[in-house]
Image (cartoon, rainbow, N blue to C red; front, side):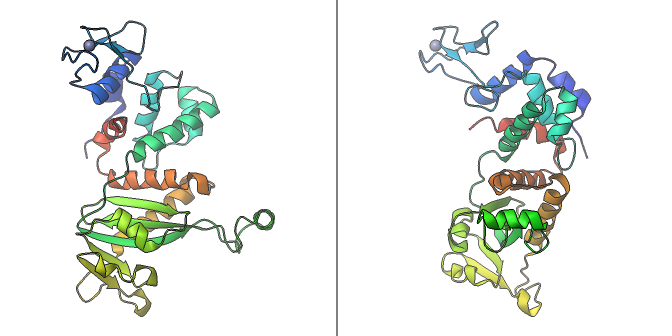
Length: 294
Ligand SMILES: [Zn+2]
């Protein structure tokens, strides 16, 4: 497999000017000046993070409204932090970033969170083709939880039974993956309709929450796990979404000591992104960076 190496990375992004050019190019390539409508190429303004129209001097700040905007951290550090995230299967923790960049832990943590957001990018469009749908529950059961932690949770009335959080997952046969953390009261059916295109073939287990979806979809194939059926009579199964669950659970267990419900969506988005790009390390840096365009 072709890889994008540190040597290539260093050659591509040696300084902040080059990084800024890259962001400008991604966001504003071929820009027509919004003020004078000239199509002359914008030029870099010296000592500022901006470019201007050679005709009317209108200025554009390419980092505006991006994760880089309010940061005093050099762009080369940001770019390197993004690069690091593409070098290992589960990315690098803030602690490692702190060490490698020699920035304080708070900065490293903030950068990591921002990069996760960038990785998730825009939400994918509704999935098409054959789409497997399933739900899983992540977190610790009250039964196995430390006594003190359990007492604290019950006292705060965080939940009466369990602190597990539901996630619904969608995996299409063209390898698109979406996870949605279920923290509001929407039904399974509403979530499916919001994430899967009407012309798709839906595959689920026999959970009652999915019943009736055949009325909205080209087809709804049901696999009845409760009678040990793993492929239905038309040969449909939910194996892909189930293996996505095992990767998701393993990643959350392996990388993060505790993922709070507040941050869970960001984490599952990152895992989905990594699953979809696992054989594309060579273009992963470019893909993450391209999400600055919105
Ligand atoms: Zn102009």
